Length: 360
View (spheres, one colour):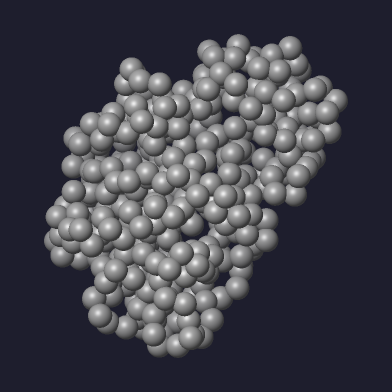
């Protein structure tokens, strides 16, 4: 994809050791905190039962994890352990919700007896898609409409319609030998958020309401926003919004802080984001349906599905079958606002859903 250069770093200790089916995970390793918050609670001691799925993602046995380099116009350098028969590599984008979803997938695979390796915070979609196309990663938690909009913005379907989008995404990913599994009911989209006081003062309820006031407002969002069709270009095209200025803010934490400090008047934030949990922020309704369908969906390399068959698809489908938007909002709030550990929250959710055994 144009404009993608640089490196996507795989952190030592955050990739999982390959755990053979039926084997036990090694001793506890470092529990990495979520990118959006401080360190949370550790994994805890726990009995030996379930140790395989509990501890494999924390082990430092994956110290061989190296740096994968993605060069614009070139292929991806082969990472270690990518020979046939090795662990399924689950990768996340560079924000906490994606790390959470990737952890859910990886832990579910381990519970199904499939060796898995987790690569958190790999980068923005442009980088992760290069890794997926190049065979460096096998599973990515995606968002139906946003994925299609990035791969084929001229697909000719309503990006906000999940039923229309899914077959087009299947078609778009087929060229990489990547398949699209069952979408979850859970969804998260980009949305425009303002402070509660601003919403009350200007009587803002929908994105359309910003039309008369946008020229005097500063918009904050991801650095990629000026290039992404559903961000600045779409806000201009669909809503006619012309903001005074755009400020790049890489994380949800920075965007929430910018609203509080008055350095931004409006920010782009996920509709299931945890930073709105305290009620100080107001999400404006996307009344003209600019945003693509945000249903969470696993995309998987065909080679991994061939290797592990129905067990792999079944493990990921079980997550999709149970994950709701309410779950996502709760988990995001726990990670971003309360600062709890991504892996701990993922494990706890799998236990509550009966996908993984509870300790004891």
